[in-house]
Length: 90
Image (cartoon, rainbow, N blue to C red; front, side, top):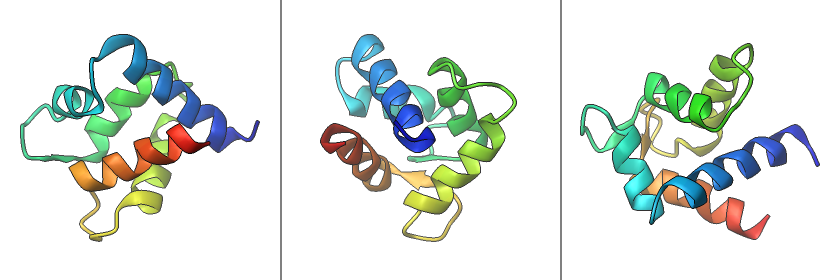
């Protein structure tokens, strides 16, 4: 399993074990209710998914880089859903 697959797998486990739906997970981590996850909120998600603290910031940046299709340096619901859908098919 690659590092990316491992990280996505941990995120999937977090969502599955602690939330009824991906929408509920998104809302929980969208602390300011902006409709978008900024890097600090993504880092919080990664912390809860038990991603090593040393790499959380880097992983957060890479997730934004990989899934932020609107280039606003945040992850909106559609971008989050695309990431979750990728996890389900991996």
